[in-house]
Image (cartoon, rainbow, N blue to C red; front, top):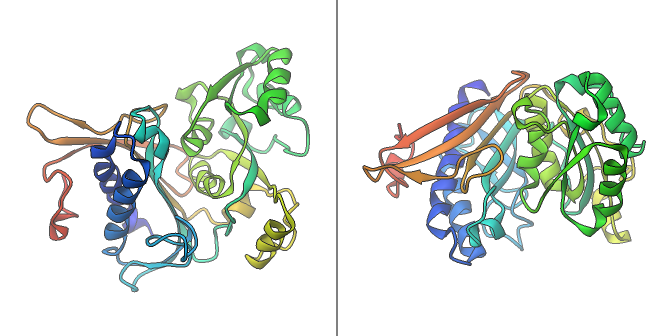
Length: 325
């Protein structure tokens, strides 16, 4: 897989560039469609036998990058592909920060095939790897993380999505003495932040989308962090859907290796609007577009941040789509 790393980077770059014209225009579906079409076009050129396992929806819901769609030339490594061409459609539509184009890949059969439902998630960085337990209260995990990092409780910051369902946990963390940093959208980016020291985030907790959880798990694996999760089927139909997708016990605690079972994995993200980790797409004085991306592979235990000047703009000519410098 390693020879495909830069190709995956170009996939997210082109998705971000395609979404840029839609920033602030209030048309989230059009923005998502542009990013998805660009991502699919680039994936189709890659020398791999890929299958989308986390995508834009079922075949009857999504015209492109639907779950089960084959991508790539059909030759090369057999891969599971997880995509979110535009994480934060509402953010792009509203011209708000923290939207990205993201993709993750692993050998065939190594990614959890998570249905589109809620998932409870807990993420930490390398210093706290192996000390978390999602079966215990979040405040107990805050104590564990503080001890592992050699920090006082009041120096710990927990990233949590600003939702009513998290209000009780937020209050408990604050009563313990730790800080809470709230975010509105951008689940993947914010989960990853807990695995990167420079962000100042020590722990990520929340109930959000299961597909985003699997994508996050790949990035956290590459960054040397740790993650646990639980699927939260809200009905008998959702429970049966889990079983149909091969998850025999939908209520079990999912360890990191249950979410991504190989170290041989790739994660790439490119900023669309500026956020916690990445700058958004910008234009320089010469009208050339500039992207800022995060790329990480395997157990590299660290991110690579890449600034790219695209001499060919959004590369509408497919023959030139791999020629950006």
